[in-house]
Image (cartoon, rainbow over all chains, first blue to last red; front, side, top):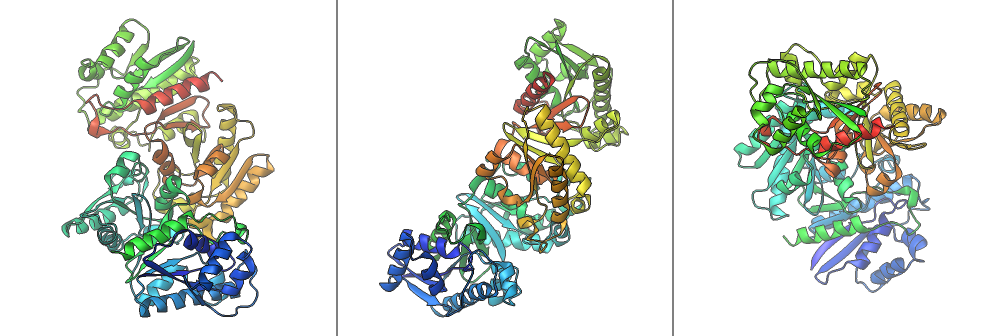
Length: 316
Length: 316
């Protein structure tokens, strides 16, 4: 059996709902799920829904395992809280220990809240930083949907700080991890990777910013190692249909440079994957969505896509 | 008759070709065109093409007027040159004088090269700066295709300089000009305008950058004046189909934030329009394309769209 670990994320958000909806809809016979979160909170909120009942029944029948984080008191839905941050962190940490000890090669995580984590004295920006610290490795955030895949050199930092983080080393490492992942998990031999410029019109030969020479250096370094990277490409025409057909993956310099085209084309279906870890880790491309939490209206498409990807990559 | 002025742009680029292809394809009976550029260069390069012949015949029959910039010597196709920069600048300047003196309310421009302009000692970043100086007014660059319209607060500056140019004054002025233009030329009463944030996740309440409070201030100021502006919006989910249906126009903080979604969705059909001028000015959404110049293979779709828009806006 392929073992998949899933966390419910911040209990005040839509994570429990999207994970439960996903596992009751998609459960291949050669797969086994273990879910990590707060069961009492789930029962309280979601046992009235059909998918909630099915999820609880699966646990009762031992079709899936549930590892509970224990009593965490009352958690207000849709609000940041210390208890919510603690549950989110504890269930993630327990799931990571489980992966290490139970031959579980893939983890699917539901969204957590940075603010709640901080309230619970876990000072991380998000999953990626927790995972990087846990496994002591450098990681890259990639998002994908069907054949559109984009890795980010920088992630959740102010736009004003992006430029100083564009080093040849960072760009090269991101290109390298992207190349490895596309080969290993997507099964693309010699993937063609488009590396974006940072500035409008790719800087017009230094007339609009100078970071393109740094990016060019990283591309050169990658090509020397036999990686089929090209760039720096003019960002605003890199994502036309013709160009999308040309490249197996993109390397974007900052969060919205990569996520705007992805979500413009594929909202609600994108999958976030962390490259560089010893396990497969995927998640949906949305946040906790506190505004619609607890209502049973959350769309599980992106979580289902994340689950399918985790299973597919585990078979590699 | 509606008078439209057209410039051929840098003679080493695809401008002459796309303008000629456009005017021979689209020439409504209540419109008159006057084209500004280098005729000898056009004849030399394009008289062998059917559309080139038709264009030259139209001039010979006085169906359209051609105002020649005079002898400029030999111009190498696909290369930046002093002569090319001079032709581009002179034909634009002559066209602007023509607009002022001939009751011509609209100008369609083909791409020019910043580098060639500089070689010819015209130290401008592009059309917008020349137009702003000529008419002594502040302008905004907007791009649109069908119902997707996006104005830019900053344009051709390094990404590292964007943050310091996001002032409440700049954002407010851009929102105001966008609102005016959508009302006047697009005929949208009380347009709904989406103002984007600068940082990932709209800064997460100050956790990732602080410019969102400045943007919020400008949005508040606009709303006080009765403009239906909303924001700052999370940039990467602002362009989903649902959101695109919601807003008549977007205000983006920097070049690629607005142009990546536009060109991802509508490449080769976008129109660039300059807001704030006493005349209508449109242009295609691409550059000189030196790599394919002179071959007769350039796609005139974006120029035709720019021409149609100029004529439509002239009828207002």
